[in-house]
Length: 171
Image (cartoon, rainbow, N blue to C red; front, top):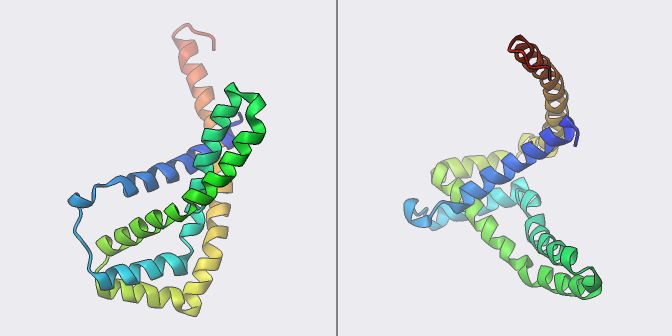
C-alpha cells in the first residue's frame, strides 16, 4: 500500500472513529434536548445532507460480514449474496438511529435559537452554496494533504535513516 492510500485510509478511518465515538456517548451522560431543538437539529441534518456520509454504513456492515463468511466458505457465494441482499433491506431503516443521534449531538451543542439560525443559514443561498462546495473543498484538501504527507514521509524516512546510521544501523 502506498503512502497516499494509507493516509487517505487513515483520514477516512479517523472520520469514522470520530463519528462512532460521538455516536457511542451514553445518553444518560448527556443533557436531553427539547423537542423543538431536536426538530430543528433533524432538519439541519437533512438540509446539510449529513446522512449521505453514513447511509452506506448498514450495507457496509452486511457486506463485511458476508465477505468474512465467503472467505471460509467460497461455495456459498450465491446463498450469501441472497442473505446479504435481504439483510441490507431489513437493516436499512436502522440508519434513522444515526440520523437521530446526529440531530441529538447538534441539539446538545447548540441552543434552540442557534439551531434555528444554523437552519436559516443552510437554507439561504450562501448556505446552499456552502453545502455544494464543501465536499469539493474537502476532496481538494485531502488531495493536498496526501501529497504533503507523502513528502513529509520521505523527509522523515531520510531523517530516521540518517539518525539510525549515526547509531551504527544501516536501514
